[in-house]
View (cartoon, rainbow, N blue to C red):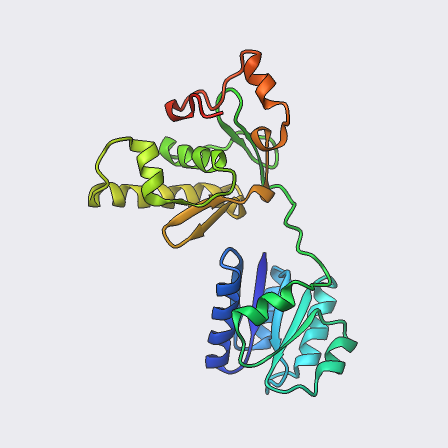
Length: 254
């Protein structure tokens, strides 16, 4: 989910962006102190949700919102203001919500529950094959090249965890078994994750990976996967099939 935040006051903007990130740590959040800059960004890359202050010297918040709606009729606009006398006008332009300052993560979450246009989180970024050898295919159904085999193995284990977060240490234990988790291994894991993120970016698949502090997970809503989708996977194995055959840790996992 892509969220833009706009407020001409830097401190208020920092607080707004921080509250959004606290409420939705997996979202992409970009902050703008100038509404004109946000409009130029919207022309290139529309967002799903727009949080905007109403009183801004460069441009009235209502006019700004109307321009953004013309660029993207399905943008969800949530107004942020210290005043409560704009509510009726806000909803006149079909805003999705209205938050009074001071902004908190709880207020953000409450308004986001009632968006007029639900962000399309069901668009699949890739297809993942787990039965037989593990493989990742891009939107054109081409195998994705990973520059490091261990980076690909990280994706494999995260897929096996079906959206549950794994710590970097847990992943290291899977990839390197009994090797000590020391400074050298920590740095190597960071390199593997960095390479993995670059590989995903090259293939326009960055949404697949959810990264929080020291943890990683797969966004199961953004991938098509035989392991997730096939209700008869037990029969596949009974009939001689394999599961992620190139990884020893996957043996007997199902």
